[in-house]
Image (tube, rainbow, N blue to C red; front, side, top):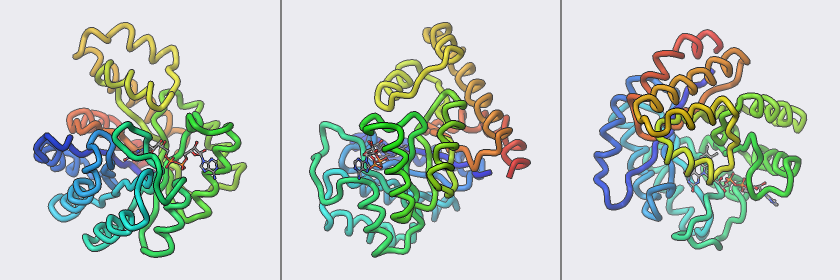
Length: 280
Ligand code: FAD
Protein backbone atom coordinates (compact mmCIF):
# COMPACT_ATOMS: atom_id res chain seq x y z
CA UNK A 1 0.00 0.00 0.00
CA UNK A 2 1.41 3.39 -1.00
CA UNK A 3 1.77 6.09 1.60
CA UNK A 4 2.37 9.57 0.20
CA UNK A 5 2.29 13.23 1.27
CA UNK A 6 1.33 16.56 -0.26
CA UNK A 7 2.84 19.96 0.53
CA UNK A 8 2.14 23.42 -0.87
CA UNK A 9 4.57 26.26 -1.70
CA UNK A 10 4.67 29.41 0.43
CA UNK A 11 2.82 32.50 -0.74
CA UNK A 12 5.03 34.64 -3.03
CA UNK A 13 5.50 37.11 -0.15
CA UNK A 14 6.68 34.45 2.33
CA UNK A 15 10.21 33.05 2.62
CA UNK A 16 10.70 29.66 1.01
CA UNK A 17 12.26 28.36 4.26
CA UNK A 18 8.76 28.39 5.70
CA UNK A 19 8.15 25.25 3.63
CA UNK A 20 11.57 23.70 3.23
CA UNK A 21 11.88 23.79 7.03
CA UNK A 22 9.34 20.96 7.23
CA UNK A 23 10.87 18.84 4.43
CA UNK A 24 13.44 17.11 6.60
CA UNK A 25 10.82 16.02 9.17
CA UNK A 26 8.44 14.83 6.42
CA UNK A 27 11.24 12.99 4.58
CA UNK A 28 12.22 11.16 7.78
CA UNK A 29 8.74 9.56 7.76
CA UNK A 30 9.75 7.83 4.48
CA UNK A 31 6.70 8.45 2.32
CA UNK A 32 6.72 6.84 -1.15
CA UNK A 33 6.64 10.34 -2.62
CA UNK A 34 5.86 13.94 -1.70
CA UNK A 35 3.80 15.94 -4.16
CA UNK A 36 4.10 19.73 -4.43
CA UNK A 37 1.04 21.74 -5.43
CA UNK A 38 1.10 24.42 -8.13
CA UNK A 39 -0.68 27.72 -7.83
CA UNK A 40 -2.97 26.57 -5.04
CA UNK A 41 -2.12 29.13 -2.36
CA UNK A 42 1.04 30.18 -4.17
CA UNK A 43 -0.41 32.45 -6.85
CA UNK A 44 0.78 32.37 -10.44
CA UNK A 45 4.41 32.15 -9.37
CA UNK A 46 3.59 28.57 -8.50
CA UNK A 47 5.34 27.11 -11.54
CA UNK A 48 8.88 28.14 -10.71
CA UNK A 49 8.52 27.53 -7.02
CA UNK A 50 6.86 24.12 -7.47
CA UNK A 51 9.71 23.08 -9.73
CA UNK A 52 12.36 24.39 -7.31
CA UNK A 53 10.75 22.72 -4.28
CA UNK A 54 10.37 19.39 -6.11
CA UNK A 55 14.05 19.55 -7.06
CA UNK A 56 15.08 20.26 -3.45
CA UNK A 57 12.99 17.35 -2.19
CA UNK A 58 14.85 15.08 -4.55
CA UNK A 59 18.39 16.42 -4.20
CA UNK A 60 18.53 17.51 -0.55
CA UNK A 61 16.06 15.18 1.12
CA UNK A 62 16.23 12.03 -1.02
CA UNK A 63 12.47 11.92 -1.55
CA UNK A 64 10.77 11.13 -4.86
CA UNK A 65 8.95 14.36 -5.78
CA UNK A 66 5.73 14.67 -7.74
CA UNK A 67 5.18 18.09 -9.34
CA UNK A 68 1.58 19.25 -9.80
CA UNK A 69 1.03 20.89 -13.18
CA UNK A 70 -2.29 22.60 -13.99
CA UNK A 71 -3.05 23.77 -17.53
CA UNK A 72 -5.91 26.24 -17.04
CA UNK A 73 -5.03 29.61 -18.56
CA UNK A 74 -1.67 28.46 -19.95
CA UNK A 75 -0.53 28.44 -23.54
CA UNK A 76 1.11 25.44 -25.15
CA UNK A 77 4.46 27.30 -25.03
CA UNK A 78 4.14 27.96 -21.30
CA UNK A 79 3.40 24.29 -20.64
CA UNK A 80 6.38 23.28 -22.79
CA UNK A 81 8.64 25.61 -20.78
CA UNK A 82 7.46 24.19 -17.45
CA UNK A 83 7.62 20.57 -18.62
CA UNK A 84 11.14 21.13 -19.99
CA UNK A 85 12.18 22.72 -16.69
CA UNK A 86 10.84 19.73 -14.75
CA UNK A 87 12.48 17.20 -17.07
CA UNK A 88 15.84 19.01 -17.00
CA UNK A 89 15.82 18.88 -13.18
CA UNK A 90 15.27 15.14 -13.25
CA UNK A 91 11.67 15.29 -12.02
CA UNK A 92 9.96 12.26 -13.51
CA UNK A 93 6.52 12.34 -11.88
CA UNK A 94 3.88 14.91 -12.82
CA UNK A 95 0.33 15.26 -11.46
CA UNK A 96 -1.40 16.68 -14.54
CA UNK A 97 -4.44 18.83 -13.75
CA UNK A 98 -6.95 21.16 -15.31
CA UNK A 99 -6.44 23.45 -12.29
CA UNK A 100 -8.73 25.36 -9.97
CA UNK A 101 -10.62 28.31 -11.36
CA UNK A 102 -9.38 31.28 -9.32
CA UNK A 103 -9.75 35.04 -9.77
CA UNK A 104 -6.00 35.53 -10.32
CA UNK A 105 -5.84 33.02 -13.20
CA UNK A 106 -6.86 33.53 -16.81
CA UNK A 107 -9.56 30.98 -17.69
CA UNK A 108 -8.68 30.46 -21.34
CA UNK A 109 -5.68 28.43 -22.42
CA UNK A 110 -4.58 25.92 -25.03
CA UNK A 111 -5.73 22.92 -22.96
CA UNK A 112 -9.35 22.62 -21.92
CA UNK A 113 -9.26 19.50 -19.76
CA UNK A 114 -6.63 17.58 -17.84
CA UNK A 115 -6.93 14.75 -20.40
CA UNK A 116 -5.68 17.15 -23.12
CA UNK A 117 -2.63 18.02 -21.00
CA UNK A 118 -1.99 14.36 -20.18
CA UNK A 119 -2.00 13.39 -23.87
CA UNK A 120 0.39 16.26 -24.65
CA UNK A 121 2.82 15.38 -21.84
CA UNK A 122 2.62 11.74 -22.79
CA UNK A 123 3.50 12.46 -26.38
CA UNK A 124 6.49 14.73 -25.77
CA UNK A 125 8.06 13.77 -22.42
CA UNK A 126 8.63 10.48 -20.65
CA UNK A 127 6.95 11.50 -17.40
CA UNK A 128 5.14 9.09 -15.12
CA UNK A 129 1.77 10.84 -15.12
CA UNK A 130 -0.66 11.04 -12.22
CA UNK A 131 -4.14 12.59 -12.27
CA UNK A 132 -6.85 13.71 -9.86
CA UNK A 133 -10.14 11.91 -9.17
CA UNK A 134 -13.26 12.73 -7.18
CA UNK A 135 -15.02 10.17 -4.98
CA UNK A 136 -17.95 12.57 -4.55
CA UNK A 137 -17.90 13.69 -8.23
CA UNK A 138 -16.19 16.86 -9.45
CA UNK A 139 -18.45 19.89 -8.79
CA UNK A 140 -18.55 20.89 -12.49
CA UNK A 141 -19.36 17.40 -13.80
CA UNK A 142 -22.65 16.91 -15.64
CA UNK A 143 -23.28 13.73 -13.62
CA UNK A 144 -21.35 11.10 -11.63
CA UNK A 145 -21.43 8.83 -14.69
CA UNK A 146 -20.03 11.57 -16.93
CA UNK A 147 -17.29 12.30 -14.40
CA UNK A 148 -16.22 8.64 -14.37
CA UNK A 149 -16.28 8.59 -18.18
CA UNK A 150 -13.95 11.60 -18.23
CA UNK A 151 -11.75 9.96 -15.61
CA UNK A 152 -11.42 6.94 -17.88
CA UNK A 153 -10.40 9.36 -20.68
CA UNK A 154 -7.56 10.63 -18.47
CA UNK A 155 -6.35 7.07 -17.91
CA UNK A 156 -6.66 6.27 -21.62
CA UNK A 157 -4.68 9.44 -22.38
CA UNK A 158 -1.81 8.21 -20.20
CA UNK A 159 -2.50 8.75 -16.47
CA UNK A 160 -0.98 5.78 -14.63
CA UNK A 161 -1.93 6.67 -11.07
CA UNK A 162 -4.87 8.54 -9.52
CA UNK A 163 -5.04 10.60 -6.32
CA UNK A 164 -8.43 11.37 -4.86
CA UNK A 165 -9.92 14.57 -3.60
CA UNK A 166 -10.19 14.63 0.19
CA UNK A 167 -13.19 12.92 1.73
CA UNK A 168 -14.37 12.19 5.26
CA UNK A 169 -16.75 9.31 4.60
CA UNK A 170 -14.92 6.14 3.55
CA UNK A 171 -18.08 4.45 2.27
CA UNK A 172 -18.26 7.08 -0.50
CA UNK A 173 -14.70 6.18 -1.50
CA UNK A 174 -15.48 2.46 -1.63
CA UNK A 175 -18.53 3.12 -3.87
CA UNK A 176 -16.33 5.26 -6.09
CA UNK A 177 -13.79 2.40 -6.40
CA UNK A 178 -16.63 0.14 -7.52
CA UNK A 179 -17.68 2.65 -10.20
CA UNK A 180 -14.04 2.86 -11.39
CA UNK A 181 -13.84 -0.91 -11.53
CA UNK A 182 -17.02 -1.10 -13.62
CA UNK A 183 -15.60 1.58 -15.94
CA UNK A 184 -12.46 -0.52 -16.47
CA UNK A 185 -10.15 1.88 -14.59
CA UNK A 186 -7.43 -0.36 -13.20
CA UNK A 187 -4.56 2.02 -12.30
CA UNK A 188 -3.73 2.54 -8.58
CA UNK A 189 -6.10 4.96 -6.83
CA UNK A 190 -4.85 6.65 -3.67
CA UNK A 191 -7.28 7.92 -1.05
CA UNK A 192 -6.86 11.61 -0.19
CA UNK A 193 -6.95 12.16 3.56
CA UNK A 194 -6.90 15.60 5.13
CA UNK A 195 -6.46 15.76 8.91
CA UNK A 196 -8.69 18.48 10.30
CA UNK A 197 -6.65 20.56 12.66
CA UNK A 198 -8.23 23.95 12.15
CA UNK A 199 -11.96 24.66 11.81
CA UNK A 200 -11.56 27.67 9.50
CA UNK A 201 -9.28 25.76 7.14
CA UNK A 202 -11.63 22.82 6.87
CA UNK A 203 -14.70 24.97 6.17
CA UNK A 204 -12.75 26.67 3.36
CA UNK A 205 -11.62 23.34 1.89
CA UNK A 206 -15.06 21.78 2.15
CA UNK A 207 -16.58 24.89 0.55
CA UNK A 208 -14.12 24.56 -2.35
CA UNK A 209 -14.36 20.83 -3.01
CA UNK A 210 -17.85 20.00 -1.73
CA UNK A 211 -16.82 17.03 0.47
CA UNK A 212 -19.71 15.87 2.59
CA UNK A 213 -19.40 15.93 6.35
CA UNK A 214 -20.60 12.72 8.04
CA UNK A 215 -22.45 13.15 11.32
CA UNK A 216 -19.53 11.79 13.33
CA UNK A 217 -17.22 14.35 11.74
CA UNK A 218 -19.66 17.27 12.13
CA UNK A 219 -19.94 16.39 15.82
CA UNK A 220 -16.15 16.65 16.21
CA UNK A 221 -16.18 20.07 14.57
CA UNK A 222 -19.16 21.35 16.56
CA UNK A 223 -17.74 20.14 19.85
CA UNK A 224 -14.12 21.27 19.49
CA UNK A 225 -13.99 24.12 17.00
CA UNK A 226 -13.28 26.72 19.69
CA UNK A 227 -10.71 24.57 21.42
CA UNK A 228 -7.72 24.36 19.05
CA UNK A 229 -5.74 21.74 20.97
CA UNK A 230 -8.70 19.36 21.31
CA UNK A 231 -9.71 19.90 17.67
CA UNK A 232 -6.16 19.06 16.61
CA UNK A 233 -6.17 15.84 18.68
CA UNK A 234 -9.66 14.89 17.48
CA UNK A 235 -8.80 15.68 13.84
CA UNK A 236 -5.69 13.51 13.98
CA UNK A 237 -7.65 10.67 15.63
CA UNK A 238 -10.35 10.94 12.92
CA UNK A 239 -7.75 10.73 10.12
CA UNK A 240 -6.09 7.71 11.80
CA UNK A 241 -9.50 6.03 12.07
CA UNK A 242 -10.13 6.62 8.35
CA UNK A 243 -6.70 5.20 7.43
CA UNK A 244 -7.18 2.10 9.61
CA UNK A 245 -10.46 1.41 7.80
CA UNK A 246 -8.91 2.09 4.37
CA UNK A 247 -5.99 -0.26 5.12
CA UNK A 248 -8.44 -2.93 6.29
CA UNK A 249 -10.23 -2.59 2.94
CA UNK A 250 -6.94 -3.09 1.08
CA UNK A 251 -6.89 0.24 -0.76
CA UNK A 252 -3.97 1.00 -3.10
CA UNK A 253 -2.66 3.90 -1.04
CA UNK A 254 -3.23 6.89 1.20
CA UNK A 255 -2.25 10.41 0.17
CA UNK A 256 -1.99 12.64 3.22
CA UNK A 257 -2.67 16.34 2.71
CA UNK A 258 -0.08 17.40 5.29
CA UNK A 259 -0.87 21.14 5.15
CA UNK A 260 2.92 21.50 5.70
CA UNK A 261 2.51 20.36 9.30
CA UNK A 262 5.13 17.66 9.99
CA UNK A 263 3.95 17.09 13.56
CA UNK A 264 0.48 16.08 12.36
CA UNK A 265 2.01 13.86 9.65
CA UNK A 266 4.31 12.25 12.23
CA UNK A 267 1.51 11.45 14.67
CA UNK A 268 -0.62 9.90 11.92
CA UNK A 269 2.32 7.98 10.45
CA UNK A 270 3.42 6.65 13.83
CA UNK A 271 -0.10 5.37 14.49
CA UNK A 272 -0.58 3.69 11.11
CA UNK A 273 2.88 2.68 9.86
CA UNK A 274 2.49 -1.05 10.60
CA UNK A 275 -0.97 -1.16 8.93
CA UNK A 276 0.34 0.52 5.83
CA UNK A 277 3.13 -2.07 5.67
CA UNK A 278 1.15 -5.25 6.40
CA UNK A 279 -1.53 -4.48 3.84
CA UNK A 280 1.04 -3.95 1.04
P1 FAD B 1 -10.47 17.56 -15.36
O1 FAD B 1 -10.14 16.14 -15.27
O2 FAD B 1 -10.19 18.28 -16.63
O3 FAD B 1 -12.05 17.71 -15.02
C1 FAD B 1 -12.62 18.99 -14.78
C2 FAD B 1 -14.12 18.90 -15.01
O4 FAD B 1 -14.37 18.76 -16.41
C3 FAD B 1 -14.78 17.67 -14.37
O5 FAD B 1 -16.06 18.08 -13.94
C4 FAD B 1 -14.89 16.66 -15.49
O6 FAD B 1 -15.96 15.75 -15.31
C5 FAD B 1 -15.15 17.59 -16.67
N1 FAD B 1 -14.67 17.06 -17.96
C6 FAD B 1 -13.49 16.45 -18.21
N2 FAD B 1 -13.40 16.13 -19.52
C7 FAD B 1 -14.53 16.58 -20.11
C8 FAD B 1 -15.04 16.54 -21.46
N3 FAD B 1 -14.34 16.00 -22.47
N4 FAD B 1 -16.26 17.08 -21.70
C9 FAD B 1 -17.00 17.63 -20.69
N5 FAD B 1 -16.57 17.69 -19.40
C10 FAD B 1 -15.36 17.17 -19.11
N6 FAD B 1 -5.49 22.64 -8.46
C11 FAD B 1 -4.47 23.51 -8.69
O7 FAD B 1 -4.70 24.57 -9.24
N7 FAD B 1 -3.19 23.22 -8.30
C12 FAD B 1 -2.87 22.05 -7.70
O8 FAD B 1 -1.72 21.81 -7.35
C13 FAD B 1 -3.92 21.09 -7.46
N8 FAD B 1 -3.67 19.88 -6.91
C14 FAD B 1 -4.68 18.96 -6.78
C15 FAD B 1 -4.38 17.68 -6.28
C16 FAD B 1 -5.39 16.72 -6.14
C17 FAD B 1 -5.04 15.35 -5.61
C18 FAD B 1 -6.73 17.05 -6.49
C19 FAD B 1 -7.82 16.04 -6.31
C20 FAD B 1 -7.03 18.31 -6.99
C21 FAD B 1 -6.02 19.27 -7.15
N9 FAD B 1 -6.26 20.55 -7.68
C22 FAD B 1 -5.24 21.45 -7.88
C23 FAD B 1 -7.64 20.94 -7.99
C24 FAD B 1 -8.04 20.64 -9.44
O9 FAD B 1 -7.24 21.38 -10.33
C25 FAD B 1 -9.52 21.04 -9.57
O10 FAD B 1 -10.31 20.14 -8.88
C26 FAD B 1 -10.00 21.28 -10.98
O11 FAD B 1 -11.27 21.92 -10.88
C27 FAD B 1 -10.19 20.01 -11.81
O12 FAD B 1 -8.98 19.49 -12.18
P2 FAD B 1 -8.90 18.07 -12.94
O13 FAD B 1 -7.49 17.91 -13.34
O14 FAD B 1 -9.52 17.01 -12.14
O15 FAD B 1 -9.80 18.43 -14.22
